[in-house]
Length: 551
Image 1 (cartoon, rainbow, N blue to C red):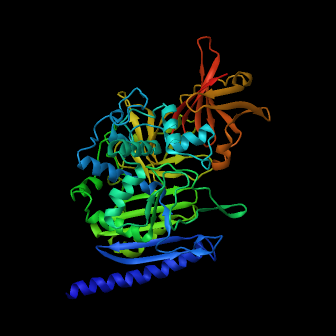
Image 2: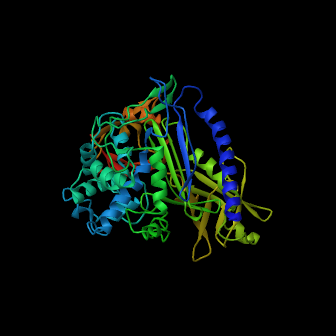
């Protein structure tokens, strides 16, 4: 009893400390009479902290409360995934079945996509938010589930073979919502509200799936602009599955506790939520389960998901080893709910932190003659050159207009940096020569080849590049034009409005390959007569290999 009392008093003291820090943070984030945020923390069955800040509606000066409902944005994905798990438990869905079994009118993508691929973001489907931007479709115009499905059907370019890689895709969760409807015989919002929320007593949680649907106690979403705070047009989009779950703080805390003591599912499902569900093609473990990311933060295991949409931001985090849950939601898209959630972690769980080494293995020393094999200039696919130089028994990375960065060996051919999180592996040929490397950073790999002195193939004549280019999948026209006598890529106005991308210069890499600021590489294609007949945008994050034909 004494020990339990000490633990309770300790947690109470931590909560008081958290309130002081949160109040201080709120003063900088919300100011006076501004949109704000809510935050709540549970431990076991107890709510140990909950507080609301700022206004839910600036027009009427209505403050946020425990009953205010916030759009959870992509945090909604795990709720859709839980609905799929419930239907699986009832024997109505097979996660290994092809998606076409449940959505027969989905087009053939040339590769079999399974239900589990949609859940884990391993389907290869392009993310519809990016498709809309590159197709010139405003994110604030009316947009329904039917519009979303038609877009998914029209954009048939897979980023990779299903199951091979992880790449976040909102398209997958739009299709999961459709599967729930087809299997259950209920509209998505009816199923979620009647079968998930209502049994748990969550009376202030809703799925927004129809234009104009009433959402009681709904916060108004805002964003910062050059003219100050402006209201966002959030309710124009009524697509569900990957977003558009509205929930109050009270209900968030009910939902968070249900994770640890589920009544809607068999308790064994928790093991599935907290473990890697698949191996990717490169042999690595998938760090995403059922609408939840699997994270290790300073030695603490987290199960979490972030969300951001026009006017709103949200972040849910479970701490399985500490029986704790944190919910944060904001009605200002510029407020970082991840930062607020991290403050809770730092305040309540810092005594459990373990600082992990960046290196997988302990540093090893390599002889100078071995280090010198890695010297030279390596040209990456985007045209960037990485230069490596041995100095006094150490290997350094040299980048123009930057300090020298020391590399630390973790094996005979692998190195990492302590200055920032990145690794490189030099590929040693059978003759002992090193002519290639792979650079690893931000979860991606980038191949490079040693510069052998060969001059790059000259760029095509400017007149060859100029013209209009059309993408059938995007149903959008792009243009290569001249500005200051240099070729530029002219794209839809949506990219200017949302991403600040306008009239981007083409920087020559080699032959028909060019680098475009913030878009990466594009390369021009040619017909049998060697005339330029199109170009391909190689990789813009959630979309890859977008082809355009020259008109």
